[in-house]
Length: 556
Image (cartoon, rainbow, N blue to C red):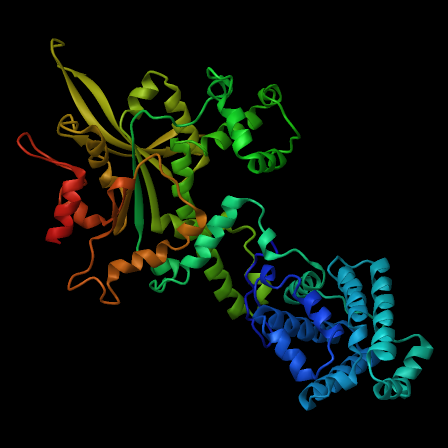
């Protein structure tokens, strides 16, 4: 994860810092170029600069080393660091660096520096402090007596300030252990630059993860609108109709074998071997069998979700759509941390840390204001009354996703006062899970009659669209999925509604994306409400979803 982290680029280093996975092995390659160099300083740098990231890695390594050594020592040790880098900078400016240093000893200097950073990235103890002093003395010996030219070596050896400090044992005796978060982050980056040899093609190992990362990074080069802060973005809702499809696979469904003797669980284990190994590692199990999972209810539940996330289930869709909320929480958290860090004078490394964003009350509140997810489970009330497994699984999804809302149609039989006649009343209800995991009713709207007049699915959406919020609605079927990295771009996509760039004609767009074959629509919510929701029907007229989307796009 450290290799994939994007640096803040707002520290004291006067250069651009890139994610480490782009810079791995570059220092080792640059050392090889330097060891084989028989040309001038400029020709060596031209060769290094042909690889842009190698040039950035060399610069960051050089300036980070200077900054870290300067902050690590005081008194005579700091005088040595200042004079050493002053001489090196003068040589670079004069084009005489190859005369000032011995490039053949560069790898030896790197090994001593690696040993030093390996100690400093850990917590301070008395033993490690002594080890740092020893590592600094070894670095001093290598740099002064092997790396520098004969002329500079004699100057440092005859420098009385250093000579007395060495004879008295005071040189590097006092270590200023890094405490600043920004300095600790820079130390970690320098250590990884010096040690990690894995190429970018090996990170990550999972092919699907590579594909998603590649698609995401390539998509960032599109001409997309500038995203506003989360507090200023367009609020939106996601809307999913559900009837009686599979919500979550049961253990019996996972283990039952077909005519070929293959179960769903066995099939997925063979299709996704690396993901199965990662799953076992997450729950702390080895090569577990089906019987081992049955002994642990929590592991059994996690196994059911792991399999369901790889099938066409409602659980998969809910997880995917809830990535919108997770992305907004992360973005809001980072925005507030960055602003707070700048105002309070905190270091860059401190306020770009994403740990704990899911527990931030401000981030959660901001995400809940801007995003609503409603699943319209038309017969959820009937499923609960008949104790269907689907109802229990939907209740479980509500418990695991606090921002999830479920809408359904509730039927009641009303007996007349004389007890001779009964009538049916219909209510559209919206529920969420309370702190005890029970259904908590939020809204209850009495309907004029049975809402199901034509197609069941569109009417399932019609009765519940009133529970959505915001200016935009995404309607998506329950067999679809979403990715966290794609959810990050939702703010940019919603800016298309503003027509800021004049790309959509005279009027602002009302249907942003309409992929009927994939059951994906992003529409202006107000337009849907004014046009009669997502489906029009009277006793003499029926307008299906596809035709309605065409009419909205044509007349608006």
